[in-house]
Length: 106
Image 1 (spheres, rainbow, N blue to C red):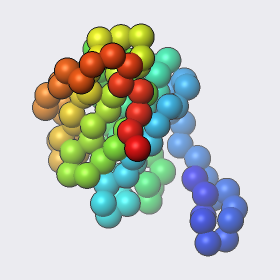
Image 2: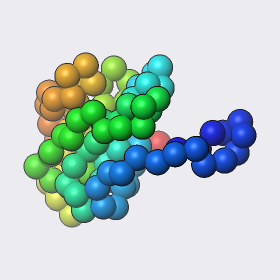
Image 3: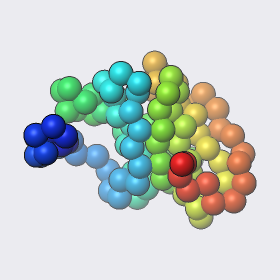
Image 4: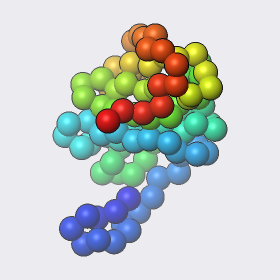
């Protein structure tokens, strides 16, 4: 974790192999880190620097984006879907077919 104002490293949180994307809740309290090789999305308490939940999708995660829900795309070699995570419960609420190679968002 980096203190942007001070421009220095202030801590870290261990998650799975090959983190590929991160998204934050609007208040910045939680981060959702998608780790491709671990096939897991990690819900992280930013202030306490600890993993609160591990969310296991059917295919390898590549990106996270959070609003009130987190949407996580599957890897480009898998089934062409995006997983929706309810950030209140850290449970997968749906999987949406989106087509080939849903890698990340812009």
